[in-house]
Length: 240
Image (tube, rainbow, N blue to C red; front, side, top):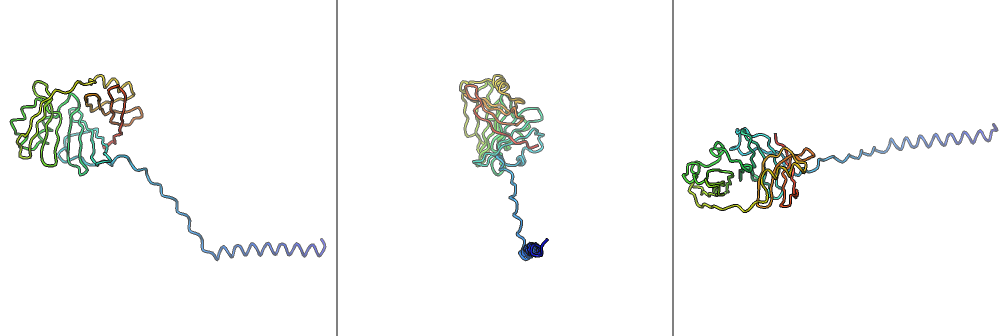
């Protein structure tokens, strides 16, 4: 190697070394940039409120298979439950947990034990309760009024309204409109659509509503319209 080429090579190596050292020095002099925090992963907002306690009046009754959904408009909660006797109930509570409505499944009645627990004493002892041979639903108003719905001894749909003082204020009897569906037909149609474990059931004039497990294994409230189509399904959340 000639002296000239040797000098050039030496100068090039020196320059490279200086540049490298300068970069290290600059990196040490500058504060390290803080790591960009990762965006926290948040769970998707649940479409239903978390499980809440049933009203105190319904505690200790041995209710099982509890499911619920919460109405996002008014905060009311709709519950599904099974009694010790194997009957199904639909229960509605307001956003404060106050009992608003309790309804037996189609063809079933509210048990005497449940009525004793829920009815105000003055209503429970009223002789006018004899107007109903079967009680299928209770409604509780904010002002203390209570409505009992069911059938009389002739099978006529009957509704009794009681004031907060326990005195009956109104009696209504009416023949239900002709129904499009009967319970066995509803159950068969739902099974054909892939639903199973059918629980609480209600027959309306033109539609039917039931709670069942769909083909995805989800517990749902499902409505059947007058043409036999499933026109609404709402998921229920298991509580126990």
